[in-house]
Image 1 (cartoon, rainbow, N blue to C red):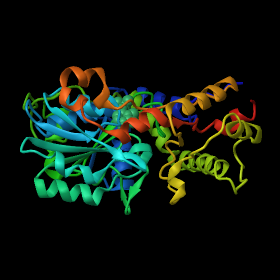
Image 2 (cartoon, rainbow, N blue to C red; image 1 turned 120 degrees about the horizontal axis):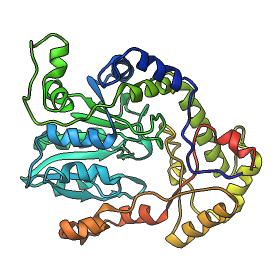
Image 3 (cartoon, rainbow, N blue to C red; image 1 turned 135 degrees about the horizontal axis):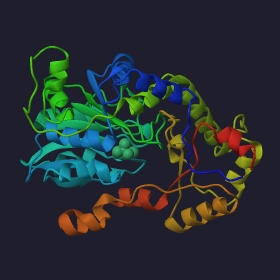
Length: 386
Ligand SMILES: *Cc1c(COP(=O)(O)O)cnc(C)c1O
């Protein structure tokens, strides 16, 4: 038996709902299941308006269109993030300006943002790494003082909060991912959350290929046509039906993931022996196959479970991480590293040489030293078969 890094979870209702969607006779987007999913998020998390997209990448591209990002604009974002966070804005001609991570967390260091703002700065993109919140009060204050848009890349942050507010509900816009590696998944999928009411109407138009089709179907206009820029950002009802089966089980999925996270925490926290869901022999291997000098460092200060999207360890250097991952692999357990700093990428070297030359030591450290352990719904069952 092998333990993969991730195994997408199926609740068992996916095919039934897909069949229902098909029998409803309308399987293009913006139908019954899409609306059900969007309402679910609006009601549960207080997002003003949600629009399902085919990916979080698409939702980020919609955000760049909505903010009228154009050549010469600058957009501030962490270097330690997924390429889509940057691509969405670079596609519109923007220059990306990278912020270093915090010394004690991969999230962007909010204290370093203000010095990067120039007259060309248009927006700040925050990324809630591992579903853990960035310092949103500080970031919103900076944005408001400088008249900047804020978009929360909440791809990993479903069901996470900052001071009682759902992540993705605080910036002007938020984006979510339902890629199969995320807590709630539909293979490929995402969502744009629009919190600034003034952006809602245009978001719908961009979503529907630059037409006022959504307003037409509500009976607000008597014909629809080309009124703005746009693209095909909405997923089909087949995807939305799959997603609905997952959302119905959100609480159950989250409870299980948090329990696994707690078990990992207990495992790497010397004094506790609480190993209830994970199989004991699996846990022993996690611990014994290589020395782990530094654990999920967050818990040295306080326990931060967030939404149990990831559980990671931080090693002192690249060699010790490589060694530990190799040991685990030899025992059938796949642990993986995460982002490579974007400012050090081949793309940045070519297109943003000034960013390439910057020193962002914390971001580089997470690139070299962070290791993610398997965390998925069926991990406890699988680990009994090791
Ligand atoms: C997963 C992820 C994305 C991309 O999501 P897709 O739905 O695959 O496009 C973007 N940003 C972050 C931070 C992510 O973790």
